[in-house]
Length: 530
Image 1 (cartoon, rainbow, N blue to C red):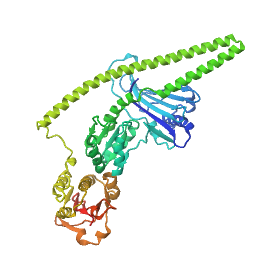
Image 2: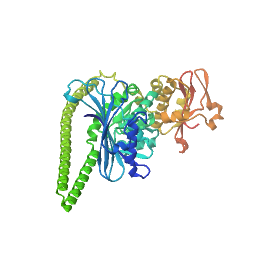
Image 3: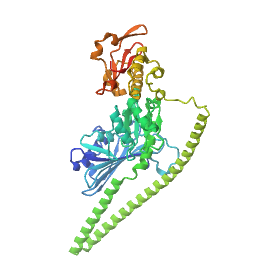
Image 4: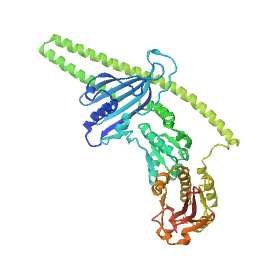
């Protein structure tokens, strides 16, 4: 089989019942094969010994699925390996899924899933790459509350993690610095399609990568510490465990394509996972346990025959032992052949990788030379990363840049500029980040159709902003609350909180009016709490 995808999980009992993990994994496997009872399929008890079955194909006209399974192990170490063959659309090639569930001597167990293709009979012709999607078995195991599933000691849930504030961003930064972790897909969703992608990726990439969503504020926190892993606005970046590598970035348009996970992330990560996950060590341990158990039984049988003077019994015991040794030798030969094939494949891929690296370096140098000559100034820049920091007293350059970047979805009054000049607010970068997040929020809110969401939760979940629709003190001060802009009266009571529970000269606020008709926010105050 040419493996295209491989994941391995350590599985423990979440209820301190390690002896039940193996049986629970077998139950999930049987449920998955039967489509949760919709089609006849092997049961849990069928998995007590080797077997074979033919199941209807999942796609009409796509051919039946052939399922075979083997068991190995002793009273302490066990494993069940199930292999599913299904014809591909064109030619004789077959799609192969191989699942191994295991029980270790120390308690708990493991789950391994490998997908790939086989081309039998020496057939030589182009074969279309099969579509790779995570087996639904993994989804059921990951959501089983009686099981604790880990990869490289990290808990696997099949869900994305939201990083919405600076405290969580600090934890993420610590994780990014670790070399013993999965790749992390950082996403800054600004469209529902991007949120959908994050949900899809977190499920499909379980065991391959972790998925983390950022808002503008937490994305900036990452950018300031690790510029090389900065996330494009509305886009994503895949961060490898070693930060000195090149980390692929994806634009907002790319992550919103429905096929993004399937066509870009799964093939590349799946290919790397085959190398990283190596051989099926749980199955090999179980097979070795079977051989040891067989040797013990043969020795006991021989001892009893010798004690009874049963020459025929001795001959049978010796013949059984010879057969077991032949099987064990065949197993080692198969393993050696597999290792040789993996070595040859690795050598070929290393040569390909070197050629690709040289090609990449050539085009990279061409691009850099062109950039130095000034001809590449039309390259796309992230306009949000170019927003100037608020001056100590002059806010106009920042306000103008935000208005342009947001395509007029945020505008500022003259009073907002005066308020900033008079406030002497000490945390200028922090206020700039909040204003930039507010500008992005204005674009995201007014670009989409449908009814307005619950703003307090929406601002926090999507942009990391603490929004309040009212202010008890300001509501009684009509002169500060209401203002005129574009010859219309506006209510400037809604605001964004920037720091609380600090000294009065650090309590920041951004007061603004919502203009649904003009599809914009009108900011009337930037500075200290009114």
